[in-house]
Image 1 (cartoon, rainbow, N blue to C red):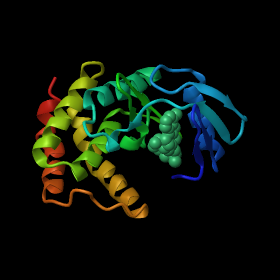
Image 2 (image 1 turned 180 degrees about the horizontal axis):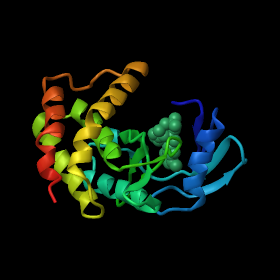
Image 3 (image 1 turned 135 degrees about the vertical axis):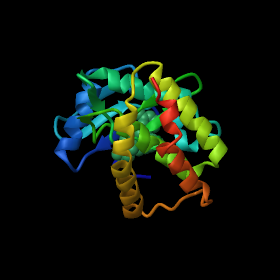
Image 4 (image 1 turned 60 degrees about the vertical axis):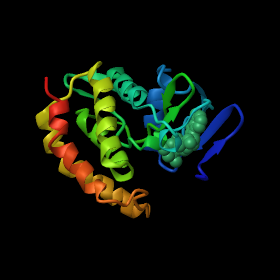
Length: 205
Ligand SMILES: Nc1ncnc2c1ncn2[C@@H]1O[C@H](COP(=O)(O)OP(=O)(O)O)[C@@H](O)[C@H]1O
Ligand SMILES: [Mg+2]
């Protein structure tokens, strides 16, 4: 476990090396949004204490709830908007989506930035593209994108033009952190191609 995050029975203490990361997290937690655990306190510079919620990271769930995940991301994107841009998570690692028995939470806002929404969804789906067989992945995309679009629009042109850079960022991070694909089948490539071509159908107005 990460040495900067300490899990206690009822609270979680998170320490930051970077004051900017602290400020970004605090900006979200200070507004007490429903989609995140409650902020209990902070020290003003490099530490926050938040409520420990009864959820486990989506990637560790036997049956990840992609409908819930799409809804949570839409909640975040509705939280602060500027025209077609939103406060985006940037690090949409499925470990930052916690699933409980009847609801979910988003955590980890240290990279938030104002941007178009599409990269957040693509980056999230790339984790599942790396892990799921093709049929399961197509279903994941359908449910996740469907839940998001029930709340907020997505732009197919922006999706397509954002894809290469988001894939590059994803691959660089995976390399940097030495993560290998859990599901090492040919489906990884098929899944990514699906994100490029067929996902366009899922984004039609
Ligand atoms: N409020 C919380 N309730 C329950 N588990 C949490 C909570 N905050 C963090 N965790 C657990 O700790 C892990 C790391 O926390 P996170 O804030 O994502 O730190 P990092 O910036 O290192 O990714 C999460 O993936 C989750 O498993
Ligand atoms: Mg995290």
